[in-house]
Amino acid sequence: MGLLFEIYIKNDNNMKYIDLKSKIKTSYFTPLDIIQAGFAYSSLSISRWVKQQLIRKIKKGLYVFSDMEKTLDIKELASLVVEPSYLSLESALWMAGLIPEVVFGTTCITTKSPINYRTYLGSITYRHLSPGLFFGYLSVASKNKSYYLAEPEKALLDYLYLTSSIDNRDAVLELRIDPDNFNHLNQNKIDQYLTVFDNKRISHIIAQMRKIYARD
Image 1 (spheres, helix red, strand yellow):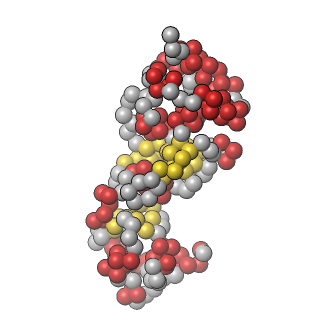
Image 2: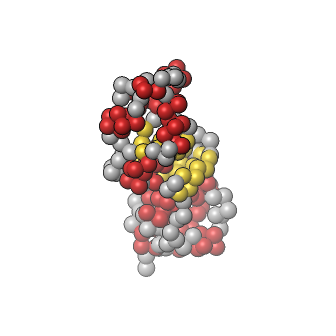
Image 3: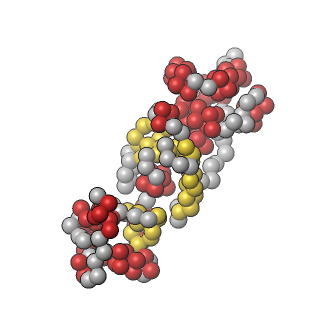
């Protein structure tokens, strides 16, 4: 498969922008999409289209048609930039109504090395978890493509696990977790996931949260 991406065509008439755009129905594409559409991949054409602002380069091997870039949601884009990955941490906690602050930037989990990307839609931060902790997410249908989103219970545990400074009651209170939404979480699922994390600190913090946010 790697050899296909190394094809360079001097006569780039083999791949015309208007023809490619008529074949690729999504707002984004990769070299493999070009080949599967029946064209010979031309790096010369790609470079020229980027300079002409017909397409936007997101990263090496990932491009967006400029006249369609606003149709792509950053959650969809995040799932394309790094694979495998799923939305979690602050982004998923805010989406679930567990934290009040609007999150600037998109936060994701991946089994790959941690990395930050700055895109035209905003910044995307990827935090690393081992493959054994890469679970607890659902596929969400979206306009252009589906993406993976952590279950609220898993997003909370991911955040606690990766934020070692949360280790006491005061740190828990500073999170400003919404009590009602915390109590709506599936506590049995949290307990099941805690056995997989096997981490005394986050187990203790969850116990603290249950005391703090216990219903009267």
